[in-house]
Amino acid sequence: MQFFLDSAHVEEIKYALDAFQLDGVTTNPRHIQASGKPFLTVIKEIAKLVEGTDKTVSVEVNPHFLTYEEMLPEAEKLAAISPNFVIKLQCIEPAFKTMETLARKGIRVNCTLVFSAMQALQAMRSGAYYVSPFIGWKETNGEEVGGFISDILAIRDNYNFSSQIIVAAVRNARQIVDAAVLGADIVTAGLAVYQDGFQHPYTQDGIHKFCQFWDKTQYE
Ligand code: E4P
Image (cartoon, rainbow, N blue to C red):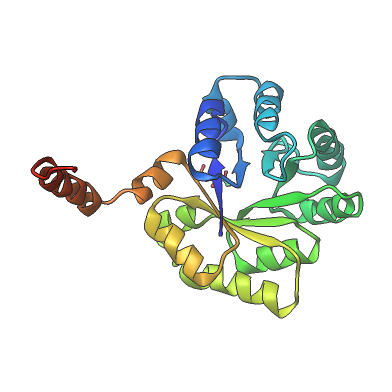
């Protein structure tokens, strides 16, 4: 399973690339705004961090763009900035034609804001490179997500669609493990979610205990 960082914080991304073999990055308008930098400036900075690798950076088209005519040129403009960019399009009907056109031109699309298996199915039919079901938002809304993810994976496998499934809006390590058990290709989460998941109180407790034994033992 691949681990993507959901962030536009350049230092965080740099850290995660080095510390735990990060596989890619996803950004969204919230992350870009939180970076405090202009959109084009920050996505170019992130592109530099993965230059020369096959790690992808998902960058989102202006969310005000809701038509094929608006989305297509902007997607092409962003894709031309870096070969690592995958263009995020919101999961609305005009995006399907846009992603089909982009796929024919060799431009990869991440279909974002996916909340139903039907949306995911159509995104896959339209040639989306990534499909991003947002599980955190659904859970907050009281919806179940296990069946949601397994339905999407089953549909993908039934029809041999090439799309990779990014389980997105992940809030804790349990959700990452659940996604891995279901066989999702990728998860994307914030740095704190990964770091919380990498530690366990018993590990800390064990280190403390073993240090005490160690300190009472001669080395040679
Ligand atoms: C994924 O690509 C999205 O950027 C992300 O997971 C959105 O969710 P959040 O901003 O609520 O975490």
